Length: 224
Image (cartoon, rainbow, N blue to C red):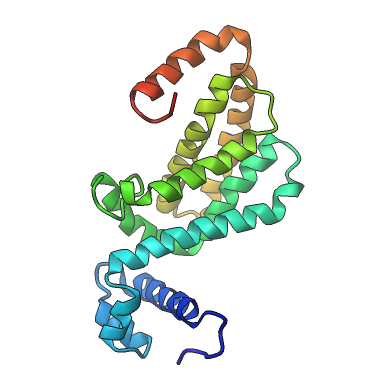
């Protein structure tokens, strides 16, 4: 079933297995689909499948990585087109929504694990920390050309990432056609956010920024 002659046959095989696994998860549900069914769909013995993926959790962790890599690649392709902060933030968040558009039901199922910090599939857990930090770093890059106080540079990437996560949560529940409500909410939130950033950089808001930085630092959400 798998094509030969790939530069790295093992990686190519694993990529195909991931695609097949995700298709079954979307068709039958993450909880319902079994490893045996996925192996059968791939025309592979269960033992051979375990060589590439020892569990369904390992499949999903690869999926998280795939989403992050696709997000970074697609944003990089269009980064030069984003002339200002509003455009850069819009590119980041709308691209993420586009990537996940066909996986809303699957992501909704996986959302339950976020409430279990020690679960390997938790969006906020230790096993996904690297991917999470890469995502936050993309917002840091979006701010890099802005003239901002140091405290804002420290806290804004996390706050922008948190806004993205809130929009993604709304996106999962949005039943409007083509998730039009999410698109409208995202654009409104971005317009408001850019205006708030412009105001918050003023010296008069320094005490507020200092208090917020202190709260996030004490909570361990940012580094000093």
